[in-house]
Length: 505
Ligand code: HEM
Image 1: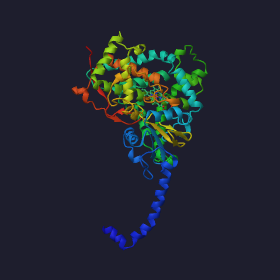
Image 2 (image 1 turned 45 degrees about the vertical axis):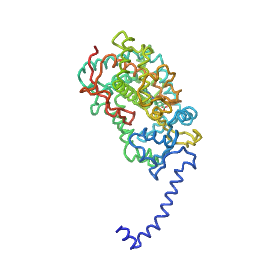
Image 3 (image 1 turned 180 degrees about the horizontal axis):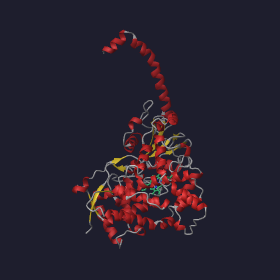
Image 4 (image 1 turned 30 degrees about the vertical axis):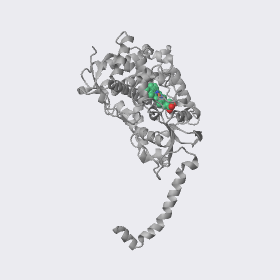
């Protein structure tokens, strides 16, 4: 009051008012025009603020806030994150409109700004243009890593990694075990064996020794997923204001150093014809990359992308399934019964999985309620196109909120309950045809690792449940298990699942 009177008395307020009013009008006019949805026929959405757009409304659980916006504005919404336009699909129809009808125009990705754009044509997960290099990666993976033949060839190796995990766990009786960490190590070593014929992680190292590979990887992922100003304001892209690109570059070089020597050695052997691999089964994935003329940098990027794509996704699926089964005693005892009647030895061999429909239904139900990639991996529009009669301008980022679709009562009956039975006898699969259930995505960017990921999840889960009787530490009541989620590279359990096992009677 005093200040206003002082300013008025001095005529300062009226001068300021006269000066600022047109300025405010210009700013509001500019942003109204820039963000106006109806003028551009954009999908509806919450009103954006000048400069920041809707950034302040996203929060720490974007899958939840965007599900709420969808309830208010419809299945296809648009948001402004800074100056970046984002479109989010939250119904099977909207997802099909993007992943099926307009897949050709909407299957590019935006490279996170922490990544080095100089290698944009080498990335797999982040490939921007689905060009020749991306096509050859998909073909190589399909033929030499995930085909029925390739998976059969890897089965001895998978069994070895499984036995190693079980051996480690048997020595942990009455000790608290972090299930996610143990599974992560198993998955990482399986992948490193397939590519390089080498284990990179040790089980004693679950928490990641500072300076070790696991620690370096998690630091790297932190930098990639940390909100980057340039992602929201591409105008600042050149400046790397938070230094994330520089840090990420340093971290990736350190990660590459774990295998670069092996790549060089193998390449030299191949060149000098000292290494003739007659047996197809004995070929590493690295050999395939070398035979196909991949450079060291292309191999580094491909290997890192495969490690990132395969480890957190599978380990979080296993951790969530174990948590859900502990909470749902009846489901757990049905899985046990099924395993008991269908396996005649202690070890659960991969070929028996078609005989385990209930376990498979549990995995499907987990992937419904806890999809590791709740928005899939964000897409980008290469060209302007239309979805559900709305315009999607070129360069728009696109999220498919599979988390929201899975929790929508119009799509699923009693969606929040864990009911594996819903998948029994139901002709609904995650192969990218049923848009109400797409935890692996759909269309040309759909997860190529589905066959191998599912095999690993099945065999690790079956072994964990078949071999041990798991309980919570300190006799905690499993029905009260905390199931809060944490949004990150994948949708993780906020409190890692810690378990102790008893001998099975
Ligand atoms: C439970 C396990 C897994 C889940 C739920 C999962 C899920 C996904 C999803 C949602 C996408 C994006 C799809 C899209 O944009 O439509 C994806 C992409 C990808 N996944 Fe998986 N994934 C899993 C396991 C694996 C494994 C084991 C590997 C490799 C060994 C793998 C390799 C990849 C790659 C390379 C991409 C990028 C494909 C591209 O952009 O062309 N994934 N995955």
